[in-house]
Structures are given as structure tokens and as C-alpha cells.
Image (cartoon, rainbow, N blue to C red; front, side, top):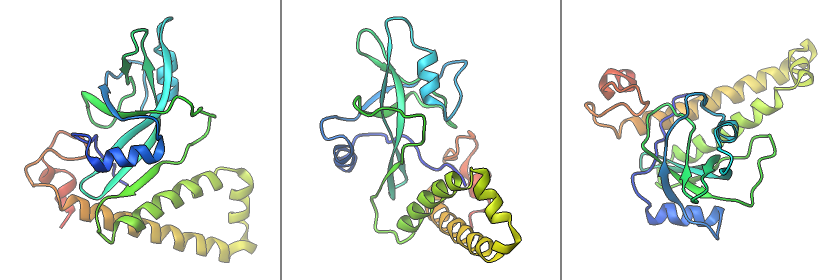
Length: 211
């Protein structure tokens, strides 16, 4: 599955309303993105904690992503709040961003487990909701199948029918993801920078097989 979401270029009314639905007392703002040398993708809480100076502290919230004209999503995130109250993101991404769009949520605690991502369809495209449902289901399955008991249950020959049903569900999810990706990629011009962050032209990267 390709990551086709990017940082929004501006705070639209749709984005503002989306953020209000998540944290009513907060407002989204663009903050500098300066990935730390020791930081890793997907590990924002550790990245922020280990790169705080003695007078800094971490601040929880949500990073706002947008996929073309079809989808907004808010992903639980952590940044550094400096002593002068300025904010900074030190986590790297698959693309280089000068800024990220961050929604502070200081009352929400990180409990060392995944916090569900929030989604909002912003187009009438029929592919969007099945894509969201697939993403939610994939996260659920990843958590469900991470235990040894679940793996043993699925691999038990007496549960072969359950395994077949599971594989069918996974296939349906993959189809929903593929259909949404194809729709999204059609919105991109062939000579535009590829949305995946490779720095190649779209037609020579993700668009090469998107016919």
C-alpha cells in the first residue's frame, strides 16, 4: 500500500471543521519540520522525548494529512514544545516537508499503544469510504494477529474455513485500497513530482503502471 497522503497546503474550512470535531478547544497550525538525525519514521513519541532539551517538553496532538481532493485524516502525533512555546516536529517522513499541519491536543495521553486515526471523506467518490473501512480493518487485523494465540488458532488445520474467510476479507481490503489509489493517482499530472516522495516525475514512478 502506497502512502499517497500529503501535508495540506492551507487550512481550509473543511480542515478547520474536521479539527474542531477532534479537539473543539484547539486550532490547527503549521509548525516547522526539522527531522532529527537519530529520529525514525513512525516513532514520533520516542523522537520527541529523546530530542528535548532540559527546558523543552513534548506536546501530543494530531498531524493532519490530505489525500488529493478525497480524504482528510488525523494521525496521533507528538512534537517538541520549546521554552518559548514554539513547536517543532523532529520526526522524518517519506517526503521532505518544511512544515507539518499540527492540531495540539495536550489533554490526550500516549498510552504506549496505537490511537485510532480519524478520517473524513471530502468528496463524493464511491471509492473513499471502502478505502477508509479497509484501513480500519487492516489495523484491527494487525493487532488481532499479533498474538501467538491468534496465529496458532488461524494455523490450526481444524480452523481452515476461518482461515479461508480471513484471506477473502484481506483480498477485499486490498481491492478497496487499490481502487482508491488508482482513483487518486489519476488526479496527478504526468510531469508532476511523484506523490510518494521519490523526487521522480509521476509518469516515471507511481504513475508508470497506473493506466
